[in-house]
Length: 399
Image (cartoon, rainbow, N blue to C red; front, top):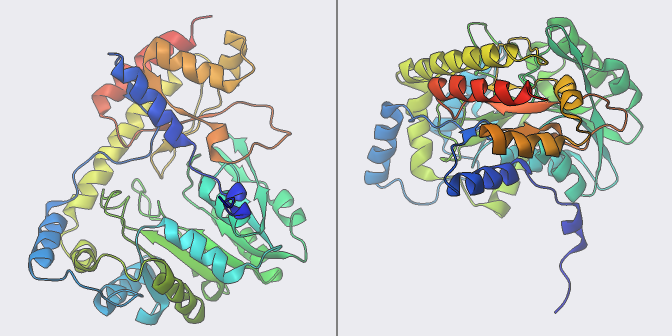
């Protein structure tokens, strides 16, 4: 048999799924597991959306539709995305996708040639790194540093990482895994860098509307950024529908037209009847999404309270996403560990708490000296959060 394609050697994955398998195996042995490892939303999708999906399925919206998506949904997305970011989009600036993730690969295919360089956040969503390298580019990381209020981007490192081969920058405000959000000054500094070097930008807005009581800000509202930025939009987080797989690419018309050409080659079209249901999601009753946010905020508060009660961990309260990224360097020293995996495995076995490690979100910087872990509180009840954190406190505070 002929060997598989060499490019597969550069294809990464979401290693956090391995933690899911580990937690499941521990639970299968009869052990209680507190699943803080996977950022899924184990809550029902709002009923008006479910009813709309059932209606349009029954009404025969089960045939092919335009590769770029039905115009009615594209128009609703252009209106919703634009208004919530203080800019204007037209229908032909929207390409419907089967989830948020396809926008990453299609954006890179559209703006990057083999050998080009793309800047991406690290720690960050591991598919950035995977897709850049799979498609023959060089993935160039930029990093964050810890502050009293959370995390800031290392802007000097970012500037110094740009070469004549750099073509794009991936930016994930309201960030997975660390919950970081840019100040206005940081956002403007990033925009200045992108404009100065004439780069394309992918703005990963997966968590743009997972905000607790504060209106989100978008980099596309800064003059000069809308025309060079593609927004990754997803229905997954706002409407608790991660398994439905609906999203969109929103950006400059010619770039979006090329992304839609890739739709034709990849999946022909995104699920037809679900597209009609998403119009209801965007324009119908919004009480369901608000209830989801209120519930997530209570879970956030319980998780932050639990972590800050542990001797050796201290974390600021993030105003977005559903992730916490505590520094556990003191815990590692207390335990005598030098490998974070040892802490992760022992924590599961002694407390039942399952979490991800910094290593699951991009290759660590060789200069990193501190240890971080990630908690997702979206898929676990408030009661279990408090119970799990109490057990983790007992384990973390033991020598």
